[in-house]
Length: 211
Ligand code: HEC
Image (cartoon, rainbow, N blue to C red; front, side, top):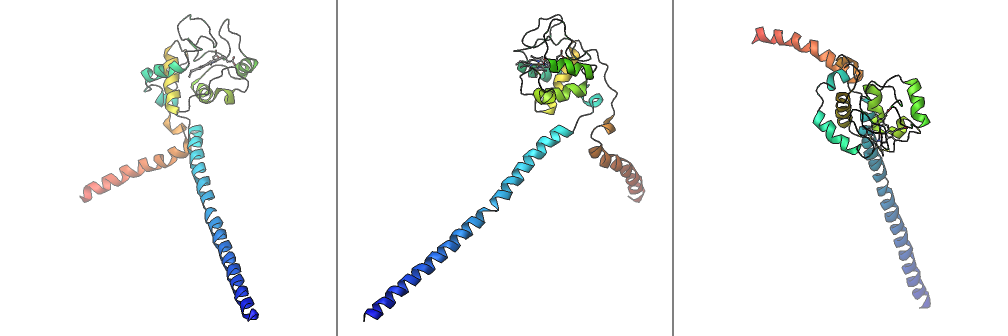
């Protein structure tokens, strides 16, 4: 009698043990089901990084983009600079130097401004502020010139930087416009386009007589 009871109890115990094992498996299943979520997240991060990387790598052909840049938009973006800079001809230095004529000027050379050592050093390596150096500097000043005292986060958008450079060029800039050379900008992207251009006229004359 008591043996039977024991059997029942043992049976119940076994069932419980099985249920626990089952639960564990389910739980493990849940954990392993969570795992793919991580690569998914990583992929998203990669895409974000990719966009950032694209903004980093694709340097526009300034001879192409500067002449058609939006000066009004550049002036509007300058609102972000105004707490420290002005662009008036002969304007005073503030937290940052006066920026009249800065495009084409030696970095760190505006009269009467106490530049950081980092900026004056930069001026010994780079003769003048040109489009390309301005473009990189304005993207992330403190990353580009480590130790600069320009405490400004930077202009992330390529378009904002191009418009800003065009605007600054128009404020007493002395650097001549580079000659447009779209093929020189982003060679990787230009290559397939260059290949496609001769292909299209070749196909068009063939298609016309046939039609
Ligand atoms: C918080 C203040 C601040 C803001 C905002 C700021 N700057 Fe500056 N900027 C400075 C300072 C300070 C320097 C001098 C850096 C040094 O000596 O390291 C400087 C230097 C520069 C230089 C180099 C000037 C030269 O004579 O070589 C340029 C160009 C420039 N800034 C452009 C801009 C533009 C364009 C913006 C807006 C998009 C901007 N700055 C926003 C403070 C600022």
